[in-house]
Length: 142
Image (tube, rainbow, N blue to C red):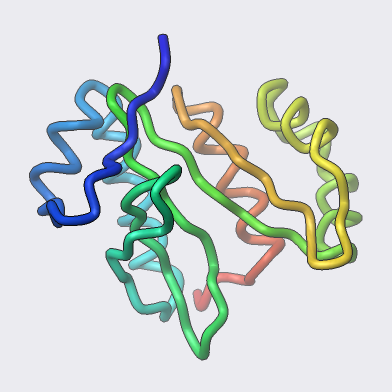
């Protein structure tokens, strides 16, 4: 099943539009945004990423992005960029990450500007692995 993103730049989605589009996985979407709001002081922004990727909800502070969330029909994907040192720390917790996350991590090349992980969240295990890794990228405030 292909995952359709919100690609119409002229149609700015509301929070309800996003929730409706994600459908049955909306509880996971709400949980991760609640986690970020509770643990990080980043600004939440709705932005049009590009014609191929569509609308995103991203968290930024001082021109640095924590992560970008792309709502899709029936799911959502997260773009998380890890630097070389962060990627090395992820290798230290491999036994705590699910098979899907590890597959994405291992199949993504480390570039000079980071390892660009595109993670499709389909279940709680995917979300739990993402939370463990985002804590490596940026320590929670609490």
